[in-house]
Amino acid sequence: MKTAILYTPLFLEHRPGRRHPESPKRLEAIMAYVRRSGILNSEKCVLVEPKRQSLEDVLLVHDEEYARFIERRCRMGGGPVDMGDTFVSPRSFDVAVRAVGASITAVDMVLEGSCRNAFVLCRPPGHHAGVDYACGFCLFNNVASATMHLLRRRGLRRVLIVDLDAHHGNGTQEIFYRTGDVLYVSLHQNPQTFPGAGFSWQVGEGDGEGYTVNIPLPQSTGDTVYLTALDWIVEPIAEQYRPEFILASVGLDIHHKDPIGRLGLTTWGQLAAIKKVLRLAEELCSGRFVAVLGRI
Image 1 (cartoon, rainbow, N blue to C red):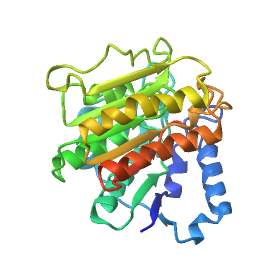
Image 2: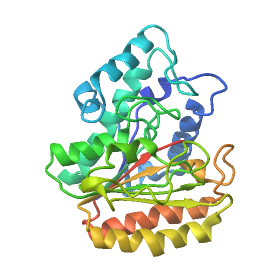
Image 3: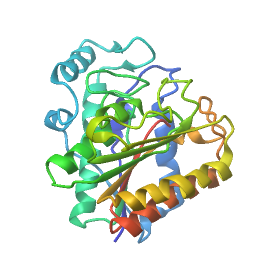
């Protein structure tokens, strides 16, 4: 079976500003490389244009009043939606709902056997978004929505989320902080930087105690330390948890050339990290794996 790459040109219509770092040009560059590489003409990959567009998917995680606020802000022409750096444009609501739908489509495709695994190339990113707030360029939490779909609609009981973004996924952590149905593991730079979360002592509460694992890393960590953390910390925890499905938030800002991230990985290191998580899926849950693009 093939790897499905989920993408639609609609994802380019979220335009937070000409000089904003979360630019559609970065996703354009990714898709240009994918097409130029020839993998879409091989037996390994298939390009899928996601069509799913449902507010009900968003409401699996997010408060309806918050979702309607984002919708109204976009209909009014756009602007800031938090106290920081998260902006919307006229089509951002539709784009963000489609990104959630694409993530859910991807996990369904894997569950139903129409592809082996999947990579969702979407924007805006999602892992900073909480139940009722936007944060860090994120409007709706794509990975959390797909996870909730697996739990509530597809009957799964153990989902592992591995967050490979340079910044901690504070929204994802908060959403699942009190449940043992989801094991959230994040490798990220110093939690004293944005978003000010992801300390090692944050391990979950109540039924979720022990199901949040934060691995803060120093500036300029590089490939060796990052990959060692995956081998020595993430792998044994995942083996003990025995997930039924693995999702990854993949932030390309862990690369050493990223203007914001400071972890200092090479392109080889990024690829090796994703391969390690994919191998865990092969060993633990019959290859059920979906990666969702984070900050690019």
